[in-house]
Amino acid sequence: MIQNKNNVILQNKITTLIIVVATIFILFANMESNLIKTYAQEEVSPQSIQLTAKLVGNEYRWIGSNNSTNPTLNITSGGDNQITIKSIQGDPEEHELVISAVAAAAAGSGNDEEGEELVASDHIEDGSSTAVNFNTADMETNDYQSLEYYCEYHPDTMRGKIQIK
Image (cartoon, rainbow, N blue to C red; front, side, top):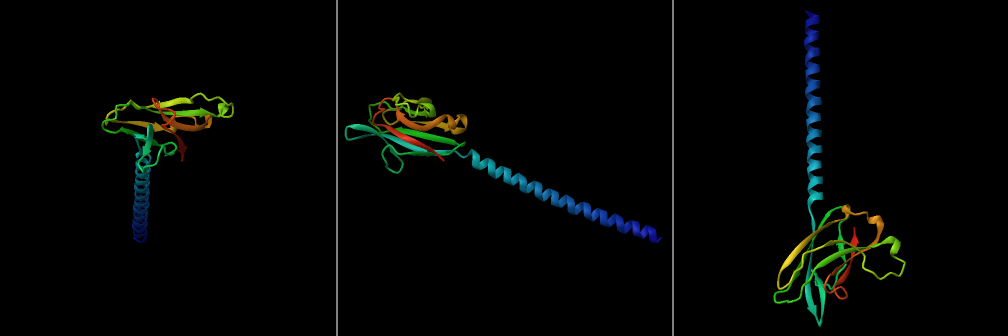
């Protein structure tokens, strides 16, 4: 009888231990799942940048959302970056955003040629807009010294630098 009672106590202790271990496992599994969901949401969120093509004096310029002229664009390394370009209503000129890279090997060569075109938008005019997505994960950043953007039709006056953060 005493041995039977000891077996029941032992079975209760084992059952309690199994329940505690299973509860801890479920809590950690759920916490890890929430962390993965949060991390995935942060990676999916694209950074949005807006540029407006505007005639300043007698030359076209890119105007940033903070009213800066040909601003340096800060893009996220390895993340999606959406750049929207807009034209002002009544603007008869065409504009197209081009992002290019200057190769590290050619940086000090004195070569004034345009860099390698990485991405280009559709053209805009007369109040239209378009967006282009750019992700630095799609390129080998070590191969390039710098990135820049410019307008295909006004490359001398609508040009700026890109910084990867």
